[in-house]
Image 1 (cartoon, helix red, strand yellow):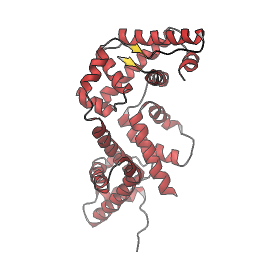
Image 2 (cartoon, rainbow over the protein chains, first blue to last red; image 1 turned 120 degrees about the vertical axis):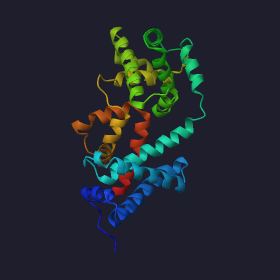
Image 3 (cartoon, each protein chain N blue to C red; image 1 turned 60 degrees about the vertical axis):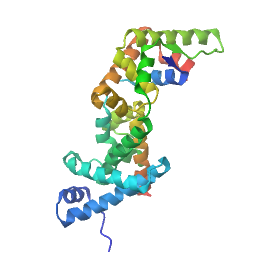
Image 4 (cartoon, rainbow over the protein chains, first blue to last red; image 1 turned 180 degrees about the vertical axis):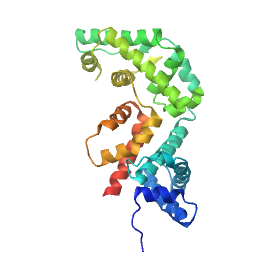
Length: 204
Length: 78
């Protein structure tokens, strides 16, 4: 006979349990995780074995972080969120591991140039020119070399986990660096009176 | 360094979305399950999750994970 679905408190108690209850709960949670992972990762090239590995790692992390579950969602959603982070970090790492970070750093050190484009009107051309000049000023004049490197890597689509690893930084420190760089850009554009409407008009 | 127009757009969008106080990817993970359920159920985002919503607009990695989780949670509800 199939057992009734567990409530959150029951999941938490059972997952922490070292006896038969815990074993059954971990088996059930593992099934939930593998099913969820397969649903979203098969199309991304992950096979069942890899999903099983992700689920196993997620189970360990769920047990470690059990005290951090606040009960604001279903327990299974929370466990799946942890599995998603593990799986996507791994897949992104495999996608980016052979990309040269040194080439990006080199790019970040070279003078900034923009894609040439002919606008439909002189007015649009002038606004585009003004926005691009402002961006060049702030990127070349106000960002640190490290901020520029992070900015370039982000704009090339490199994930934060990967950039942090290449720079030997913790991810939250990298996020702060990225935030400060974006903030500098925002403040500089605002100081020059470049408004959202201008930007949308030319670049959206 | 050569920036394509799509990269300029991306930078301008990121700059526009930048707030004085933001959450990082670890903070987002701690809210992701609750946020995914809100999204899967089509509910309005409650005040406590607005910071998750703002982070989602800025971070492609977290956006990708959230979309996958919403898909799973939505599937489980059907």
